[in-house]
Length: 228
Image (cartoon, rainbow, N blue to C red):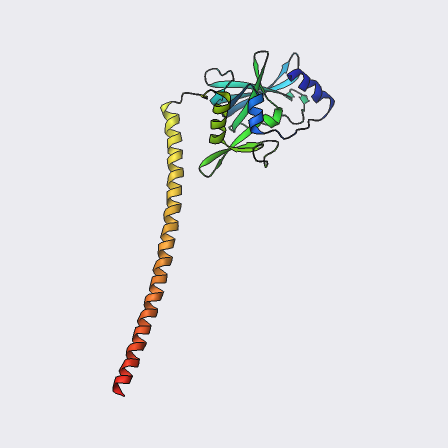
């Protein structure tokens, strides 16, 4: 399959048809979620110039991971003065959080479906959302809440994600970040509640003044009648 894909790329530009996250999950060998540590171009004897993305894997399924890290290959890259551009190839940035579908060929993990199989993991509110490189605006194809994806993957594949062991320092950093998010949300809620109380107090004061004024007017009117 990979060989046919490479031959096809030599003939024409890559054309992607929308493919749902579910369909990619079912047709790929595996999936990995982690952080991009580096990218390196090298020469493959069969496919020419390819790029290797070195990823620290946090969660994975059906993908060969060694010591919490995985190498993912895809066609194209720059090697010295020679460059090979493959339309539709995935783009990886150092430090980027990603979710990538994988395939296996000659004992190597390859990015499945090129850019269609690569997602960036974005923080949206209190949730993480997978955003696709090719179809970022298409629901169920280019976007999915990550926790929903995890549930779906484990249900359809019939297995649990494997997770990398995290040391005390890393867990402390994550807990601190989580605490800061919760504190920010709490402050926002408290601020909104305070504003509501202030508005309520202003409304109460307005009606109290109006009531007292009405009582005063009634008292004066009653006094005039008694004098008469």
